Image 1 (spheres, rainbow, N blue to C red):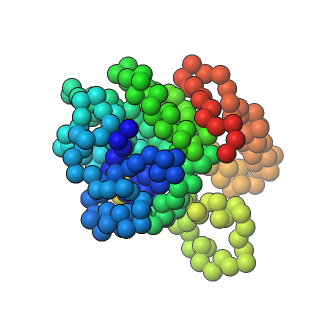
Image 2 (cartoon, rainbow, N blue to C red):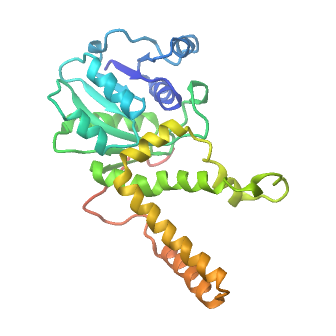
Image 3 (tube, rainbow, N blue to C red):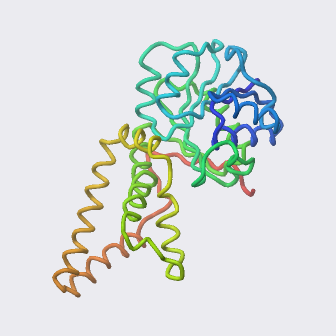
Amino acid sequence: MRICVAGLGIIGGSICMSLKRAGYSVDGWNRSKDTLQYCVDNHIIDGRAENFADYDAVIIALPPEATIDFINKATFKDGAIVADACGIKGWMEEKVYAKERNFRYVGCHPMAGKETSGIKSACETLFDGASIVVVEAPQTDPDAYETIISLARDMGFKLAVKCSAEVHDRKIAYTSQLCHIISNCYVKNDEIENCLGFTGGSFRDMTRISRVSPDMWTSLYMKNSGTLVGDIDNLVDNLIKVRDAIAAGDEKGLEEVLAGGVERSRNATEVKESPEIELIRLQDKR
């Protein structure tokens, strides 16, 4: 199988490195020629991709708009698998399926990353033990889907989540996008200055993801606004309940509000049978 990865940042570079570790030959393409040369010099890719129609699978690791621009401009082999790694799936499907394509599209979202970005942050172990969401639509080709699952297994992913684009976007709004928003808001407090000696794990966890790329995350938030706004409203409502109880000196009321959160957290089920989600175990041990 001839594979090309388009977009050689932390995710694209790590895809190349993990596939090469598994024995695949991988060519690469990148908008920045310096990054492309770095990948060649450091054996992250086997060669520069020039004609995308030469490849059986093209994996695109670019932001959403750039991914669609790439798809619309590139020429692919008939029947090739074209997969993306974007953090929004409903918008991607809308754009990809807006017209007839000669390739088989599979939407993916690797659930792995770092606070840093760029090719120098990439590593061959980034996906080891991680999860990947692989979205299924009515148009999804079953063989292409299974090929992506097989590649994910070889790359070191431990779990694949099979769901629709709607479910992906709903879950990611809560598990990822809302967390980044909370972190970004949390650090906008003057008390963040001169904190040496006052911080522990909770502070590090709350601030760790506050420095992510504003342009990239703005794009993702806006494309998932229908779901995300509701999650923000829910968060604000619950914060107001805590604030009002504290401001009123209502100790019993505050305890009840906090107890509600503890109970919800304890009763939440990590793995639950659902017609919306299928879990595919890729590795027993890694």
